Length: 113
Length: 122
Image (tube, rainbow over all chains, first blue to last red):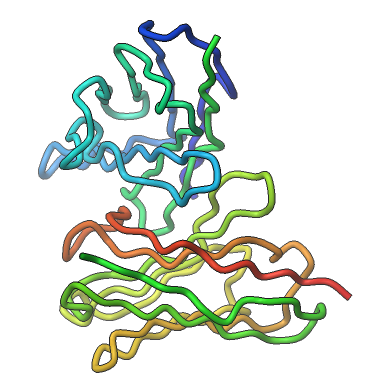
């Protein structure tokens, strides 16, 4: 199975500041035939089911604010919140879908400093 | 509006069985893969298994932790998916989410249900 490792486990960021979350896969999730990275990001607010933010590593889901961005390729990926808002307090997960044995990262908890 | 409603959760003893249902509405059910994800209390997300749409073979995949014990099926005519869970263990205690793929052939989640809690305890 492809192992997804997120870092840090948690971070506290001041309102309006940048938050950066990393996700590393144990093998490349870049499919060479279409040059797409099979990597998604989800946000889970307290008491809620998760919500899709980003797919194909950098495509924002419809309705997701543009302060959220995804980057990276191969095995190393980043989710950036450019200007943290109070409603962004949540746990964020990456997920690979390169293999049909899907796997999630362990999650990163984002809090307000 | 896409809706996924899980049912069938509850308290069950170790070794027993339970079947979860996922009733869908708001989209053409048969066109999408259904993906089950669980979350143990206070823990992260764990993929359980998936069933592809019939246009994409209709086959299933399972996480190693549930393979041989859990079975996913679908009834496209009634827009319902099932998760049959046998030989339950205490470590299967979790909220179980029924989810839908983002698009026809995708295997990432576009829509989530609210989840149903399964507690395995004697």
